[in-house]
Image (cartoon, rainbow, N blue to C red; front, top):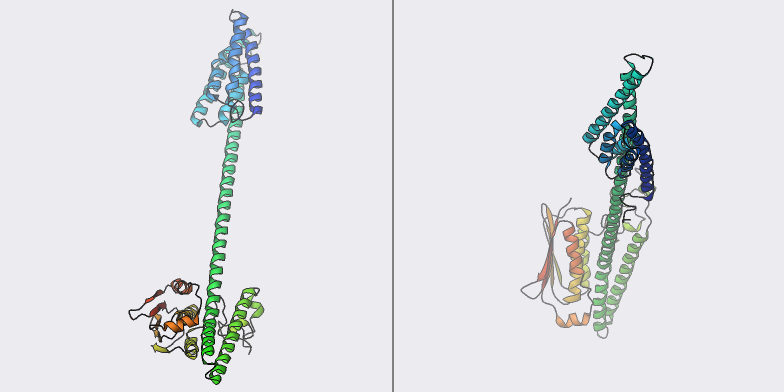
Length: 434
């Protein structure tokens, strides 16, 4: 017994079949050997032993098919081993033995049977009392030799080709299964990566939307606490500003969550007819949808805040008590929506960082409209340490990272770092992308 099966056979059934065929072949050759020994004036026991030894080689047909066929050819002159010859030729043709060897051995077996049959028929015809004609012996010899050789060889070739085809199909099926499994794993990895990127994008958008206004609210609240005992009227104005900014932050947050919860709607279901008064401008959603608000946070591939809102950001920071100067170079023009939104978010986050970490510092916001790009820079001077301590604004440490991701995703350049005067500078350059 081996790990594969029984002996060199793959299964017990194959071993039982070959052993059974070997026994039948040995008995056949033993009987024919006795007749051959008596015709040769030799002891019958010698012929029987010779036939048993020759016929039992059929057991080895799966392991050594060439040897079995050679033995069958060798005993053909003794007119024995017909079963061994037929089964051996079939096994040889069905195996992986090169076709040249199969052809040569099949030809040798055909020639041996033809010669033996021809000689035996001539002897029988000569001993008979009638003359069948000169054509009888050659024709019958050819029919018998071809009948004993051609069918097993052709059947073996067919079975061998079919077996190889099935193995090829099985290997191809296994290969396809492995490829499908690999594709499924890759699809799962892509889906996981897409989910991770979407969570990162949503977190960045929420940060940009809420952090700026909440920072301004904290700054105004600190100012309100400072001026309330001295100037009640100014305290009232600051309180109104805090309330307004809080409402704006809640509105933007609600609109962001509404976009995230919204079910996908086919475009045909929401597109008004051509020429309808309710039809929005090309590239913008209907006015009644939450995404129509200029400050509504929507996915980055849709319309959103742009460079036109930078002046409003500056005014809000000025209202919070920060000295902000806005400098614009070049002629303002429209850019691609993602470029506009990214530029807006960079300025917004830079001003938010000023409120968090450099309260009381003067700020200069520069916008430069160039031929193939738009550049922005937010630079603040040294901060008022006491004011920065009073603000006590927490920081998650992701603001600069989010700005860099946004800019580099569009093929732009982002640089940030401290200045020689003790301040901080944030610079970004984006391709125009009209």
